[in-house]
Length: 115
Image 1: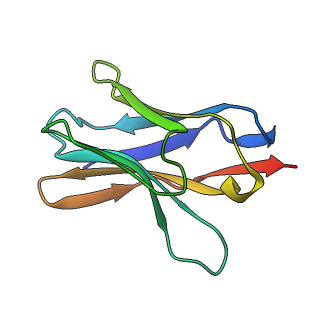
Image 2 (image 1 turned 180 degrees about the vertical axis):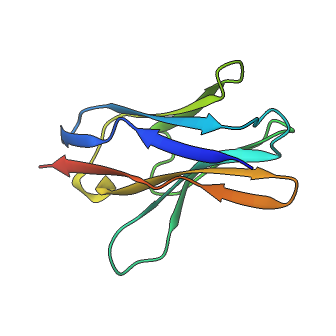
Image 3 (image 1 turned 45 degrees about the horizontal axis):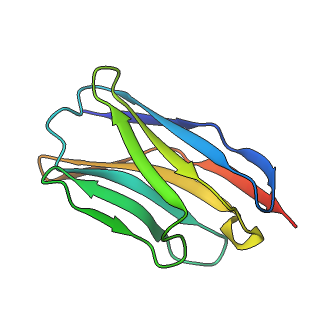
């Protein structure tokens, strides 16, 4: 069982940067994938970035070149670094882990980018 808790969301001006943190309760050392998605009202959840255990990283088209993912496996924490934020990046951001065929999601962190 894995529980994920996001933090670091908030209000940021366009052009600014933000780092989101995903704190995992339970081991994620054998996760096959981890990453971030986002969602705005009335729209489907959208890929931001996903990193697989074999080293592949997939980026959402809307954020490619502006996001990076990193992790500290000792702490069970992963980070989403976002730069050059735009108002259209405003969304709830969800942390994601896939492990042993199960998907785990955090409760989401609101990011609002003002113009």
